[in-house]
Image (cartoon, rainbow, N blue to C red; front, side, top):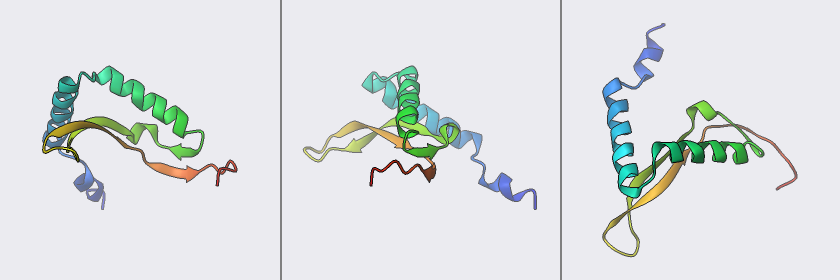
Length: 92
């Protein structure tokens, strides 16, 4: 049964390909990996006021998406933020 979690682990080639794509898009947009880390940190800090998030599993990056105005692709910031629980602070 211990081998089951190993199947869910990403392969190193997949991880390397994903990182390379991120670096290429970030390079084209002028968004450095350091800037992405600062954005991730700031997002985590702000969102943590309202939600319990897992900062280690958080992902922030830049990817190319189709533009609604033209046929070109444009860079877009994306964030994957795993939420563990909500902190009710009278917002809703």
